[in-house]
Amino acid sequence: MIDAAELYTTAYRSGLAPEPELTVDAWADANRYLSPGEANEHGKYSTARTPYLREIMRALSIGETTENHAVMKGAQLGLTQVAINWIGYIIEHTPAPILFYLPTRELAQQTSETRIDPMFENTAVLRDRVPAPRTRDKRNTTFKKEFLGGSLLMRGANSAAAFRNVSARFLILDDLDGWPGEVGTEGDPVTLIHKRALTYPNRKFLEISTPTNRGLSRIEASYLAGDQRRYFIPCPHCGYKDFLTWTGYRDFIGKKDPGHHRIEWPEDHPEAAAMVCGRCAKQVEEDHKPGMLERGEWRPLAPGPGRDPSWHISGLYAPLGWGSWGEAAREWTRAQGNPLQLKGFINTTLAETYEDRAQGAEAESLSDRLEKYPAQVPDGVGALVAAVDVQGDRLEVLVKGYGAGHESWLIAWEAFSGDPNRDDVWFQVDEFLKKPWQHASGRELRVECTAVDSQYLAEKVYQFCSVRRHRRIYAVRGINQVGRPIIERPSRNNPYRTPVYGICTDTAKLQIFARLQIPLPPDSQRAPGCMHFPAAPWVDAEYFAQLTAEKGIWKYVKGKGSVRVWRKIRERNEALDLEVYSLAALHILGPTVIGSLGGRAEEFSRRPDQESVAPRATDLRKPRRGGGWVDRWRK
Image (cartoon, rainbow, N blue to C red; front, side):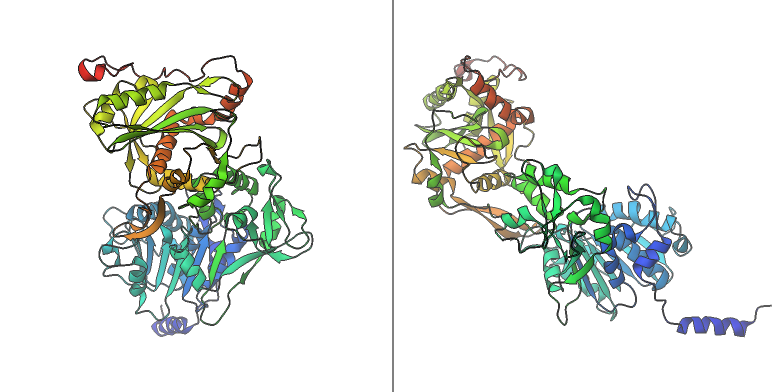
């Protein structure tokens, strides 16, 4: 027979007992099991695989009183598992309401289905605490998981409704820099979230994100507000502990390496990347990484009263098998001259904010780049492209040569005066685009693709391009968006059914201004991405002033957050527009041609016996025959 008094006394004393001194990492090691659908390395969870996460999880445990916790991280380092572990720990040991925010509702759904549900299914101590998901059971849905003493709500930070009528003691803010700048008309979403926990004196926040742009990154601001911890690892040769840095990044931001451990590699052999000790300067191969990680420790770089813990961990610390130093070095090498790839590497691998150093250039400094070409087309050019800009009283044409790694040479810049509504000025441009250009080897090259701006007098441009598709002459138009590929799929929504390619001018201008920063190489050497200009009378101060006529600035736009916009600092900018169109023409040629530019350049110089090397456009549909005015343009 059950003794009610004894049962009551046992339950009463259990309630008075102190919380167990169990930490989140110990709970995860004892209880978590990762299924094949959750992680590439499935099986029993072990913090020893990612020892840099141990301190972060312990700071989230019951016995710690810190409120704010920010992690500025590289991609794929196990931080999402930290949040999942914390949720399981809360449910078993300190049940209370939990809010889990991600950038969008779609990401919240994906995380719920692929991370949260599998944890409940594979963690024995949680199965009886959270109802099994059933179609009609509202206690366990995609966005809401109820348990004794609390609930877990999954929310997308892009919805104003996600911040209303909810409160929680524990809040997880994942992928913070991917959140919108404003939610509806209610302001900053992070501010709204912090209000969700005001009634809980023992609240805790966990912010996790890869960073984005310097000065605009939310996770960077949170990291700098904390005590700024870095993970110090020991050199296996001398025992000196310091954190890992990337030599190329310090060069990129113009800071001398102060002697930290750093990743270096022999020139042209990124696969041989290794750590160089900041004290003894000995090389450390990557197979030492597991031991270095296990013996590592977090040290605050900005300790002080009132500072909550904040951590920085880059992808250089990824365990063996999760991404090597050699792979990172190859990615860094490939990204040179490509601002978008470089930004992605700095943000997601190095976990550093990106500063748009190439959002503009000074015209005065470019005059030092003038060179005397040995011929109209120097060695190194693998293809010629052209660009046409339509103005009210003239047509301007630019011819560019491109080589390996997008190294480029300005070949010609010509203005054809006349009313673009009349045929004669277009006929002059057509003849100019047909002319051969003398290569340094003695061969003749011809323009392989031409991009014609259709923002002004679109009808005339479509007429001109529609019967010249066999010569790869295409209409283009600018797209005012950020971060898209330079070339979009062409549209044929016009009376002539001619392809019209969209250009992401933001991406193109970023690349152009980044390449203007690349110094000229020594004679006869190549420099990927470098822009060359001939010492010709027409390349004067006015040309460089037009080329640098815009500056990229960040501006807050309602509904979009902080976006980059390009502002004119002078009225005329034709040279910059033509550079954008010529880059578009190169991309229209496609990756096959772009990838072969180096080989083509060598071939041009090696075999000077052919008159022209421009390939025939055999892959284009033959234009339809017509009559009247358009047919008179066909040559």
